[in-house]
Amino acid sequence: MAGDATPAYLYIPELPDGGVPFLLPEEESHYVTRVCRARAGERVQATDGRGTLARLRLVEVRGRVLAEVESSERCAPARRARLLCGAPEGDRGDWLVEKLAELGLESFDPVDTDRGRWPGRGGRKARWERLAVAALRQSQRTRLMAIAEPRPLADVLAGVPAEAQKWLADISGVQVGGEGMGGPGLAVVVIGPSGGLSPDERSQLLATGFTAVRLADARLRTETAALAWAALWAAAGR
Image: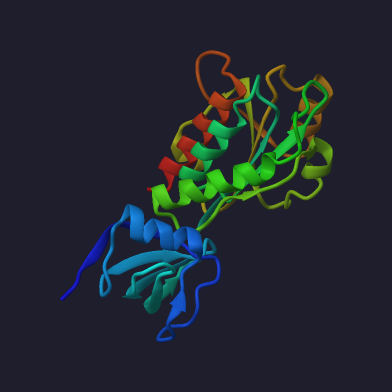
């Protein structure tokens, strides 16, 4: 009896119901045949990026791969994280998006601030979405990190739910460990741009319920602070 094809974790946005053979998307078919070198009869795992984890049986492996869903389950996340991030120096956004997606954040919101705007709108979002899919496969998560277009910080803050846990990365804030971020529900963190948030922006955040937290004993770069907070949040869920 054929076993599992290794490594094999697929991203299939539209997973069908069980028992109905379907063609894998071209990119996933290429991954199964050329990277995994899988054979008919073997099993692979797949997710739709919205919380479903499915086990597929490969029916036919030639060109576009034919598969069918043998079983699937869907789980709602108990903890969610959203990061509002100012622009880092240079072109470090790609690396940042990849790592945040690996750590399991629900969404990444690039924000324009008084002291920093995200450059190069263009095809940046599409590239980041491809990186998020690759990170989903690598980390074998069931939820794909959503990525927004850059918007002014004030506009994004207007949509933050009042009941969310709200954090502001700030060297002058209180020291907090991962256990302080381990509660259920939605956590929202704001990371300033490379030039820092303006006094007005910081005052606005504190006035609307954000708690300033210190993530290290020294001032961190934007991308380092974002990753430090995300790692603390992710570890607290274990």
